[in-house]
Image (tube, rainbow, N blue to C red; front, side, top):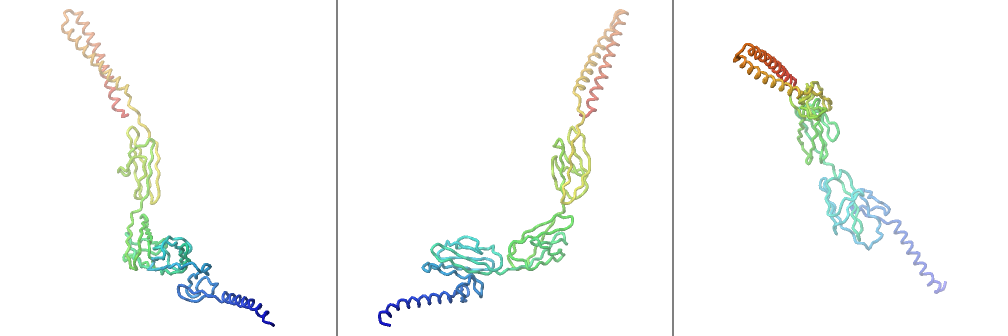
Length: 347
C-alpha cells in the first residue's frame, strides 16, 4: 500500500472510531439520581434505590439548570426556586407558582416537577409521613354510638371512647342515640393528644305541618299556641291535642302523632259559622221604636180620657188608649225578640 492510499484511508478510519465511541457511550450511559446520588441506567425513569423520578436526557444541554428546594415539615411542603415564579406540578397536577406552600397533601410519596421557560425542568419526589393522634370522645347522653369520618368506632362510656390512629387534619365526628337527634362535630386535629372531644345531643324531634283553608288560623298544641297556619314546627315526639281557631269559623279539634325525624301533616278546610243577620237587628229596632211611639200615643189618650167631659168622649179615649197599648206591647215584644235573636246568634 503506498502513501497516497494510506492518506485516503485515514479519514475513513477516524470516522469509524468516532461512531464506535458514540454507540458505546449511548449503550453504557448512566443517570445519577438527584435525590440520593445512585447511578442508574440511562433508559431508567425512576431511581432503583429511592424511587425518585430521574431527569430526562438533556436534549438542550445549553439550557441552564433551575435551582429548586423542596422542604417537608410534617404535612407542610414548601417549594422555592431560582428564578422564582416557576410552575409547580405535584403528581402531574399544577398547584401554583414558586414560592409555594402546600398543606393539603395526603401522606405518602409524591412526585414534584418545576418548570420555568428557558430552564431545564426540575423533577424529584418527597414523602409525607402520616401523623396520627388519639381522641377521647364523650357524649351527653352517655352511650351514644360514634362514627369518625363515617367509620363506626363504638359507644361512649362515662370515661369516654378512645379512638386511636386518627390522622391529622379536620375530622368529622357523628354521635347517635335513641330518641335524640344525631349530632355532628368537626374537630381540627393538630397534635398527637390524647384530645378530648365532647358531643352534646339534643332530644329527638319531629315536625308538624298545619295548613288550613282559609289560612291565618291560630294553632294550639296541648293548649299552647305554636303559631298561625300555614306553619311547620318542630316538636318532641308525642301525641298532641290540636286546636285550630279562627274568628267566624267553627273551632277544629283533633289529634296529631309526631314521630322522630318525620313530618305529620294536618290539612283542614274550616267551616264558616252562620252570619249575623243585620236586617234582623234593623227590624227589631224598628219594632221597638214603633212600640215606644205607640206607648206615647197610649199615654196621651189616657190623659184625654181622664179629662173627658162626657161619657161618650171618655169611652172613645178609652178605646184609643187600649188600641195604642196593644200596638205598644206588640212593637216592644217583636223588637226585643229581634234584637235578642241577633245577639244570641254569634255570626
